[in-house]
Image 1 (tube, rainbow, N blue to C red):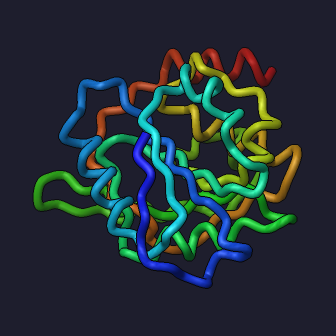
Image 2 (image 1 turned 120 degrees about the vertical axis):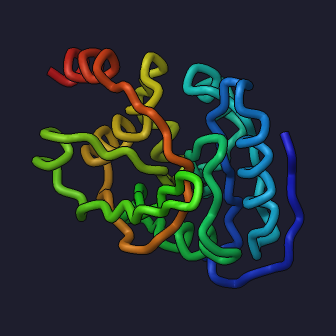
Length: 196
């Protein structure tokens, strides 16, 4: 665990703690360091970050306060600017407890904007949202987390969150993420079997 002190900002109500869970299996140390450095560069003074997997995150939720805001990101992801975590965290309210946002996918010198659609339950049930998630700690603790998922872990959180809270797409470039090969065939079978 790394606890990070950074300059203060008044943009997040009640100076809530922002917690980053960086999903990493340990094989991408360079990516993990990129994400940690990006988090450390944020203009906010109450941030904690943890490296974990979808399996171990369940055991870490007890340390969260219900007022905390949680970012679920992957090793190698970086925040798009030094104040984006504050802007995203401030979107979490008592009515909207889960958001996702657009990203820039980078592969070498190539960049592709991943512009995601606004949240719609019909759309989410018929397709997959591969995005980082920002969620209130109280909602995250209330969800049944599916640790058999990897690439679709955040999609499953978005889908389950919609039954307990409003979910919102925040139309802003929040992250730069490396291009990844994603094979969701087996995961989608498990996901459809659970939600059938």
